[in-house]
Length: 434
Picture 1 (cartoon, rainbow, N blue to C red):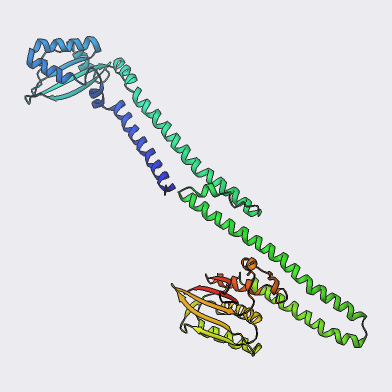
Picture 2 (picture 1 turned 120 degrees about the vertical axis):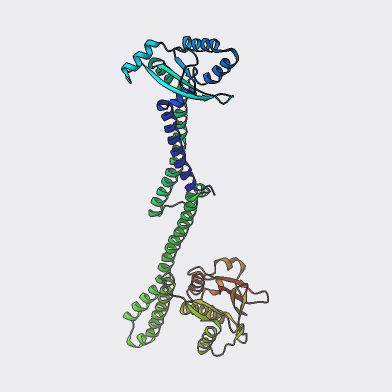
């Protein structure tokens, strides 16, 4: 991952290193005698050449070398031995020496010294006197390449800073627009897809935001669809109630006695529909802390409750008796109860509803199978959607039972698989993490 942290960190330390290096460079260039001695063309190789000439050709040749340097660079030179005695006459006039002694620091030249040790181990002291105009002219020419280096460094820092700034501000601006669109429920799912491909922290943030935006859009869409479906489902029982009430107002007392059971039945249907809608809505609320659930005990209780309503039915329970998990007993119990009642509704008389439990690779598996007609393959993908009823289920329930079961199981981190059984009938497979 090309971390944004390391890019900022590297740019920061690059700037510090360049500033520190250039500060040292200019400090040496402007203030240090050693820098002048080592870099000035008249001085940087003079000690080696002079000692070589002095040892090979004698003092007169060494004096001629100093005078040639003075004519070319206008720099006076003296050479002293270990005892401080001059080895040659040098190019510094006696009158200039007397002037230097009288005026001290207020001199028209800069005095520099350099100690040099020859191949024979003898020490030589070179004293240079450079006129300030000559030194200023050399400074101007010698500072050209440091200034060029400074310019290059500034250009590099500017480019790096610009790239770093754009790499941060552009993604942030895209995220800001995405947040604005999300607040207006106009978020486009692919608006941050390109940004999410970045391999740094902003790319990870964009990927997480993209998934969050898609999830919120799906939730908003499902809520809108649920609201439309609820409005449609509530309209039918309310219309039937209105018709029944209108008939009751015009009917004779004896006819009203016949209409009251119908009114009561419509009220019961409406109450059951509202209860299922509320149960579906409560699944999105905070259910509280998880609790240990013994699946065998929960399924036995659901079986006993179902047999009270349909005592003629046969419900067979098999599988692992010690299977347990963490969750919310009421929520999971309602989901499994919906699956069981759905199986009882479509299972023909004399055919048992089979409930099998087990575990596969750390996942608790519960299968509820009936021996009914099953569901056409074209409608299997729509099962579990709120208010959806397959054609053979059109007169049974409100289409919320499987939706409540699916939502409750997903809240437990599991999944609900609905399919026709290979041997006939319908099977609901619940997979829950243990």
